[in-house]
Every structure is written in C-alpha cells, then in structure tokens.
Amino acid sequence: MLNFQNAIQGCIDLADHIIADQEWGTPGSFSEAIDTLEEHGIIPQADAENYKSMVRFRNLTVHAYAKIDYRKVYEVMQNGLKDIERYIDSIAAFCKL
Image: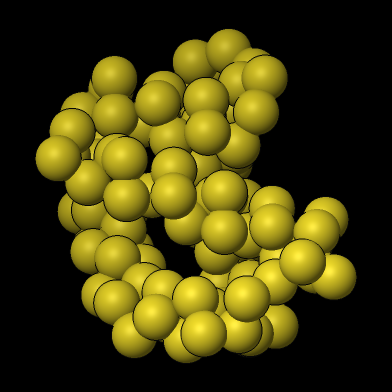
C-alpha cells in the first residue's frame, strides 16, 4: 500500500511540476492539479475522474489510515496500476518522451 501511495504521490508531483513549468497557475488542491492537466489537454477527460479517485485514495491512506478497509485497498490496487500507467503515458506524450 505504501508503494502505491508513493506512486500516486509521484503522479501528483508530476502534475505540479508541469503546471509550474507551463505557468498555468497554482492549483488549490491535488484534484485541481488533475483538472488543470485535463483543461490543457495533457490527460484525457475520460480519465480525469479516475485520477481524482486515485488522489482521494492517496489522501485516505495518508490522513485516515486508521479507517482503511484493506479489502477496498486490494480492489483499488488491482485496477489502479493500469490508471497510473495511462497517466504516465499521457505525461510522456506531453513531454515528447
């Protein structure tokens, strides 16, 4: 779970760096960073809600870890890695990597 949490944090950090480098303002939250990437065509609109769900999951694991349902964690991790891979693909395409 910690590795998954760190992977999501990395996605957030990438978003923040791109937004700062492109001078697109300062998002007020991690979810707003995802919105900003979507608004500028970096990530597909169809995936934006999945990425915001990842951010909410990360917040849960960081701030409400005493309330975590590990069955739900297992479920999220089964599909969440594909979401992270799609996110990275979108970022790589933007960076022309």
